[in-house]
Length: 245
Image (cartoon, rainbow, N blue to C red; front, side, top):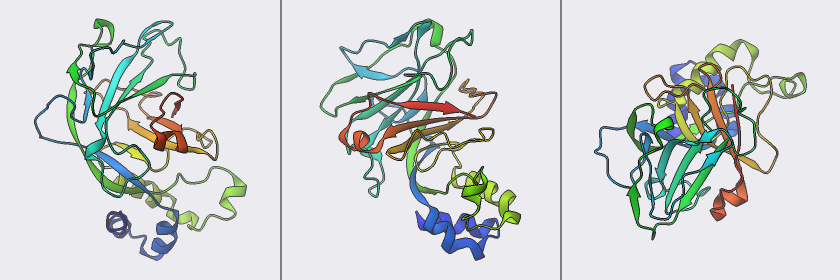
């Protein structure tokens, strides 16, 4: 983690801030597009999910949820202890072409944890949400730093000088080369507030918009999702909060 952070800090010429940035940093799992072949249960963006035989496709009041991605937890870096060590995480969002749903609505994002002893099989998405491409991804250890503070009280104790603000944004983007990651801090471009629901909540999955995958979060911004940290470790993904900006 620190090696990635130090390299990125040097690239944006913020070396004098390194100690402060290390203190602020959190580990991430970067989701990097890969040329590896697809197989049942592999980590991937888009397409159709691999699910147990008894899986019932989730519905919301306006239609079907759309599959976002699946993460093979056995591929997680050894340093990650914030998620279950085994099984498959399967992510979905409440697709709605008419704009009746809001990013912050309850259950806008749903996550299923399939245990490693469950037999998985490909499941074709419902036709209405069978859109966008698919990409194989690999999981790599990374690092993140928090969003630049957006209020005066937080800025009063902020250890990074204001003239580094543009370089700081570039640094965050360098830390997330795949425009998708687990854990770390939420990333956004337009929200004038911290979307984290509370002190016991952790960033779960953060995704940038992508034309090929047909993801457009808040006019081309970022989708951010959260889970209670203790529930994540226990494998309980029944309560996910989301926002976008």
